Each structure stands twice: as C-alpha cells, then as structure tokens.
Image 1 (tube, rainbow, N blue to C red):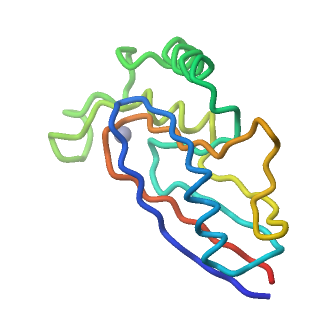
Image 2 (image 1 turned 30 degrees about the horizontal axis):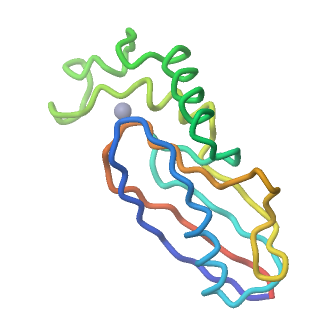
Image 3 (image 1 turned 90 degrees about the horizontal axis):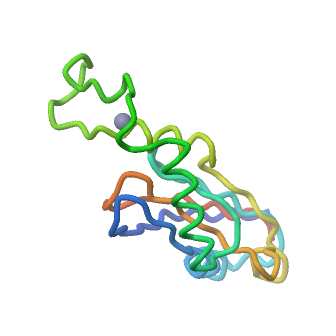
Length: 145
Ligand code: ZN
C-alpha cells in the first residue's frame, strides 16, 4: 500500500461561500499515482466545512439561506463576547460559523477507483467557507495502490 499526502490552499472571497473543490481533489489523486484505494479529506479550520452535494447555483443560494436562518450571524452567542474571552481583542464574532461547521462536518472520505474519486453524477466535493474571506487549507491523504 502507498500513501500520498498533500495540503491544498483555497482562497475564499466571501463571508459565506461554497466552492467546488472536486478538480483539486482529482488533481491530488492523479499526482499520487494511486489507482485504487481511499482518499480522506479534512478541512483544517473550525469555521469551514466539507460536504458532498450538488453544486447547482440555485441550490447554493438555498443552502446559504437555510443556514442563515438556522444560525444567523447576528444572533446572540456567548462565543461572540470577545471581551469576556481569553483571546486577542480583534477575534472575529463567528459563533454562527462554528455552529454551521459542526452541522456539516469537516471531513469526507471517498473510494478511489481507476484513479478517480467515486462521486455520483450530481455529486461534488464542496468546501463551505463560513467566516471568510480567508486562505484555507485542506489536507488530502490518498491510500492504496
Ligand atoms: Zn471563533
């Protein structure tokens, strides 16, 4: 069995943004030379998430509206009492982003078959930026042969 690890960087542009990172994932698998196995993908942040779903523009708006209703950025959160926490005074008020990240989760694993991630026709690997814009790191480990 072989393993190949790579950190990819994704620059986000908005406070809430969904990005299709399937091309970057496929590229890492290709570079690994691994044809069959498994790939494990982890976001290295507490205010981003990874999910597999349909990357369709109207659905992307629905997802944003849904999460703004469930965890509104202007809601009342203890984590946003920056002055009561042991942290730098310029910490962002981002409790809503942490909560959405927890709902979505920060990792995915997929089968790799014939050098490609096994995704269905309507599936993409989506990075959810929940407190951007920011430069984000995603860890990708490919295992197999
Ligand atoms: Zn925070």
